Image (cartoon, rainbow, N blue to C red; front, side):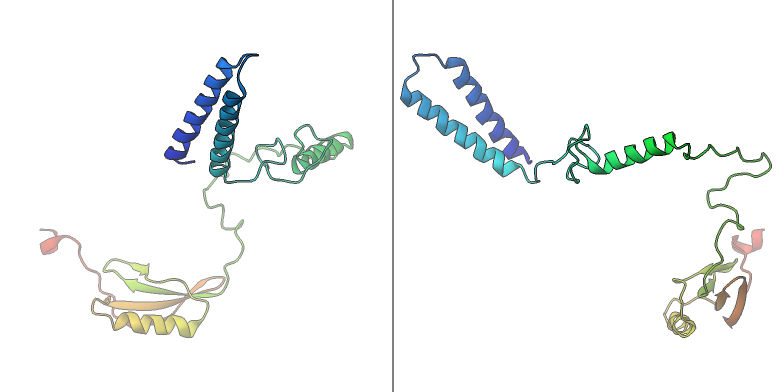
Length: 192
């Protein structure tokens, strides 16, 4: 709902509130027709502002989800989850808490190398930046495509001093090197 719609709808509802306060048993029909027209105008404004379908359930997680009449929130998805939890609790099949990790194993954001699956075969294009080899393009699944990419990189006006293609499978293997990597001192005048 944008600001203009919000303002117009608020104004229409306040007008209806004023009509409600002035209604009595002796209100003439002309006034009732005016209230009816204002009500229609407010309903039209409300229809314009509502853009989504009415929720089918009372569940905040799945408002448009499938309906289960027996569920307290009418949500079939949440009720199925609750039923399976109750069933596993009754049958004593719910999961036991895990034992704490040993103190010598530190947690890593990326996991241990033994926990990770073996890498898939791919070719890594790398460029020598003066200090070390760094990845210069997207790892490729096709060797010829990676070599064509490096050939195109070497032809650019600001090409690196050396490129290499690394084959990654279960280990890394340098397949080919273009140019000569020379260690460049990053301090001007040789760090004097």
